[in-house]
Length: 209
Image (cartoon, helix red, strand yellow):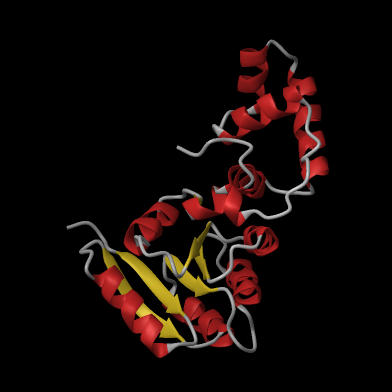
């Protein structure tokens, strides 16, 4: 059997950790190698155990999951962090992505498939809870200020196309596409492509598959 995906659980509630451990270890492809009860312990264990994935509670006392994520990724940038939260606010999702998390999943989701989410972030995918793409989860969203052409470019970015590929598809120069990409990021106030994709899905600018 191929090597299992190693996971570190970080949550300040022991019962929650126990429940998540059972969910994950029901899958033969996953092994939970450690548990942390706060952010500082998560950083230390991530360093000593070198897990492929850290399942991180967003709001822990003391060092938060957001801060712990930044510290873990400073030392081990290839680690995949899956953020778990009770909150669906757009600001928190953006902060998690900016910290380097590859996914953001709501803890109270009745249909939460944690093992599947872990496998996806371990393989390099970005994972966003489907409920965050629903209008009901996004209260008070204002106009995003993107032109029709910028929205078209954004959708191709979210499909994983390079500037050159987008230019060929839309009949534009590579420089023009690069300008559109820069303008999109400036308008939406995002700084990384992964964060841009998450923002677009979360705010309904593209339709997730």
